[in-house]
Image 1 (cartoon, rainbow, N blue to C red):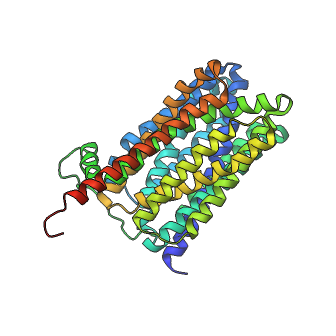
Image 2 (cartoon, one colour):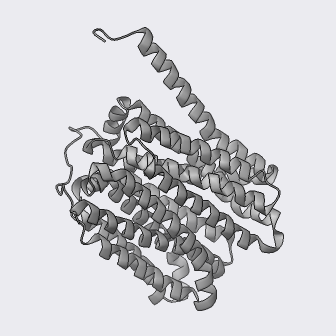
Image 3 (cartoon, rainbow, N blue to C red):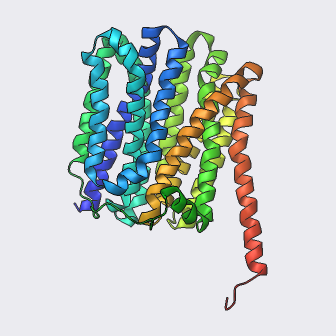
Length: 405
């Protein structure tokens, strides 16, 4: 087995275990915070702290990985997450209530720093011809981890209590760190000094000016996070409207079908012919289109079967778009790749956090179907604008050919 294939298997295993832990604590901790405080405001503060940790990571991620590259930072962030959750096993309950926002911030920070470091350095671990398939397997592993973590969390809490879940969570992060240890990088030296004295964000702007399609993909991603925030707020609401007596069961089924669709979408995306940049870009844009249309149709349904039926194409689109986006951004040169992934994390964290705050009041005024139509109309409109600009630029190039062309 060559080094690239071995690295790919280790990375997929690490992501599977790490994401399982992330979804496990996402469900368990939110419930735990509510039970400790009996206050929805405390849950809101906890979730906001987690998002704030991700935003902070996106702001410092580029500078950090310029200086410290390789596998050691990834191991450290796994150990950080394990240590934070370990506090809940040793501290008295009275002290935990005060520390939970700090733990949430640390988990959000660790999750995002791990993702930035792994995604931006993947081309130093995997051969270019294996990147597409590896990204597809990473997306598939994340989908499987979401289903397992979300469904298992409630069962484990009910059967064994929160301490058992937190202990298992610590083990998942330690195991993920062990999978990172054997990784072998083709480039070990940190990529310092590539901005030639410019600030990182200034260098990113300059780089994106010459990469209009990459800039368009990031713009569509930002718009898509607003739609994602709206449907995440709406999941429990539509579940309760359709099945008041078993809302949590419906929510679990819906997430399981959606994640299964994402798994299938990632597998299909990796098997499609063509792995050039233009193929990856088209895969991403098509995935966003399918995902947004799927969620819009989901929230128009009046029955559980209709809801589950349209959860599948929503997941398929998510799988397509994620594989296309990750694989395309990893094709960028070293000096641009790291700031692009940091900026992507910033867009996702801020867009999701702001989107949830904006979308939530709309559910008091409108039906869930109308709210999701409005917010998923934003990425669809952005896609139309991007397509219109692409057509106009193509026409301009044809009408004004460059000399010698």
